[in-house]
Image 1 (cartoon, rainbow, N blue to C red):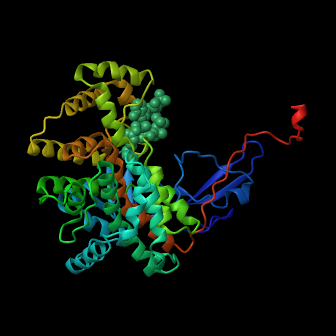
Image 2: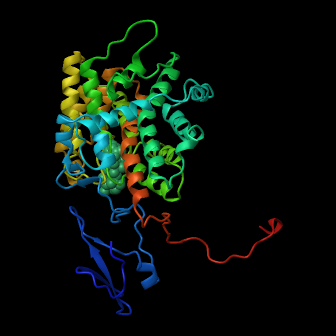
Length: 436
Ligand code: CMC
């Protein structure tokens, strides 16, 4: 990126004019490979003595990235240039993880090496299980994940030097490999069953299902239908550009915090119902509606702004969420193949039908997002609702570590430090308590 200078020599520029004084400041316009151009305003404050105000980042590119591209108007999502639909149909989660982390699809040898590296790290330190005992059995598994993922930093001192690319890579592999183990442990703890060790002869998705649903008392065979659906869910959630949790990871990482702490911060940010917590909120909403005939009343409540239609709307997608399209296909397939007739699906379909034709939703460009269908599949697989966001975290860890790695490799990386528009009290004299 060229340096922004008042008298720039950049080919494309953008000029701001102060309407009061007539002063003008010109900034370089930087072009990416896809998507809107950006005005490089890094010297804006220095040049103009003003800040720009964009509290929820609607118009701000916080970084340069080569990992994921979204065209929200056209409903396009690309990872390293590959379309998400094609990846979900033809690839697998391990391959997508390699792609996000290293930039290209692996050849056979690279794939095998990567798979071995990840499976090598699937076990967690035996001491970590005692952390779980400190939590209540009814603790939300996301609360447990925030704690135990951050705690990984206390076990892996040998990969905490963030200035060493090899240590960064080992930490990235450890995080991708250990998240499913920790997530399964959180589930097992909540149902009072013994933890199940990982099995490295299984695929990533199979191993995860095995760790969640196997019990020592009898053999467990992973259903290929469920393993396939789980793999798709993992692919569809793997990365999504500079969303709230990814930006959290980047901001935490910009202070040179260790990667385990950064991913724990990402998990905390993901938990909210406006972000990854939406998959849990969708199921709770469907259960609360209870039956198809109560859908119109619920829709009216949404229009009256009493509540939001969870699983609908997106900051970036204003046409459709391409992940939701694949997820819906997968949902239909899983329910049909498992022979599950979930009444909640009927409610979901009715909500979708009304919302897609009602002017309130059409005018606001509100469409089903990835979370609208994922919960129905996860429920059919046997996961409790509290685990839905944890599954999102397992998958998104790949995106988080890829984005963190990219940021750490960027020579111009500096601590992220937003400024503010201060609207508080001006100078006040201290009043002693007896005079207040
Ligand atoms: N239900 C009803 N109205 C909505 C919804 C919704 N789900 N989402 C947005 N709106 C309305 C909102 O009330 C506002 O209307 P008005 O102009 O009359 O004030 C307008 O649409 C714009 O809303 P906004 O809050 O400014 O939009 P945003 O871009 O800040 O929010 C969002 C994006 C995803 C947080 C929001 O759409 C939402 O809360 N959706 C439900 C939660 C959800 O499903 N989240 C998962 C997102 S996809 C997975 C992920 O990335 O984590």
